[in-house]
Amino acid sequence: MFKDDFGMSPAAMSMATSVISFPWIIKPIWGFISDTYPIFGYKRKIYLGTFGLIGALGYLVLAFLVNAVWNAILCLIII
Image (tube, rainbow, N blue to C red):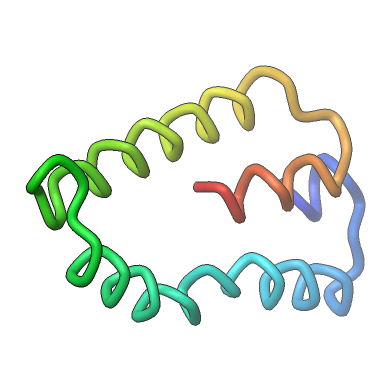
């Protein structure tokens, strides 16, 4: 998508990929938060459902509304 639709260079694509991978770096922090602060008595179910819906919304926006590089990067970070 970045190369074909947006015409990005390999250096710009690697920069975008590194920015997109940032949520995976903070994933252990979310694990700690979900284990420490339960919502309605549930430790992981609420977090999984909420972030699953947010991810699905991100895919829908990416499929139908994205027309700029930064919008695509933001959607991929949300996903």
